[in-house]
Amino acid sequence: SYTASTSANLSTLFDVGGIAGAIFAGILSDYSGMSAVTCGGMLIFAVPMLFIYDYTGNISLEMNVFMLLLTGALVNGPYALITTSVSAELGTHSSLGGDSKALATVTAIIDGTGSIGAAVGPLLAGLVSGWMGWHSVFYMLMLANVLALLFLSRLVYRDIRMFRHRRLVV
Image 1 (cartoon, helix red, strand yellow):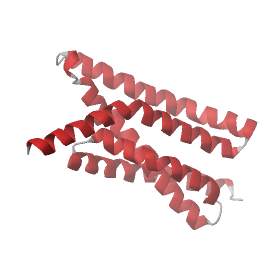
Image 2 (cartoon, one colour; image 1 turned 60 degrees about the vertical axis):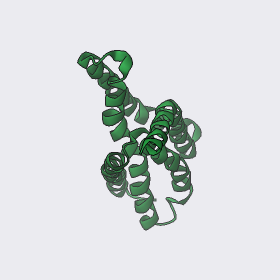
Image 3 (cartoon, rainbow, N blue to C red; image 1 turned 90 degrees about the vertical axis):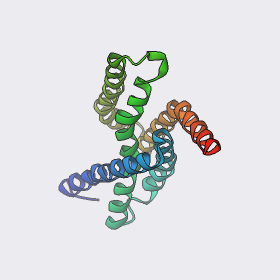
């Protein structure tokens, strides 16, 4: 029900929310020292927010703006952490023996995978929306977030284990 111009302007709010989410995720990660848990927590909240946005985003312009900012923060915030802090943690794993080339390789693989997702995502959204409707696009995005959380779960577990160990030592 929006004009093409209004829709284009609204879509940028997702990215604005992503900027705020990346800043928030970085601050929270620095404060807690648990970047994987920060990513995981944001991804956990992103899934229901995408579901809610799917069904409430068209209630009003104000609701659409709010939900775009919120979902942008929850979806893009973890991406910013994954491409920086989490990839650095993986690249400095003890099994790599401190090899700086390994860190660069891990970071490039993660960043490259994100770039592929950024290129393929809109194509898939167009195909899925044309084939099964816009609700299916939101379910596809929810599935992508669940998969990201699943792939991150090992690091989340490690962060929690290290946090518990630090509490016992102190």
